[in-house]
Image (cartoon, rainbow, N blue to C red; front, side, top):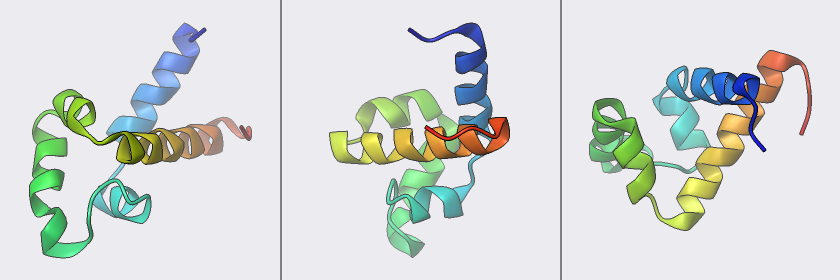
Length: 76
């Protein structure tokens, strides 16, 4: 179950990610190949996430979890 604190940490991690984070996590392609995906992420993050293939959505979830854990000082 997700708590209110969990939801806040997920949201903070998500909105504080930049393009290099998404490229490093293989959520979007690097360089020009990732331009459209990066634009879509910035324009409508929720729809971007809904349209990701399962493997990229899993990579994004892992990146968000890592970032959230760093901010909390915990490890998952």
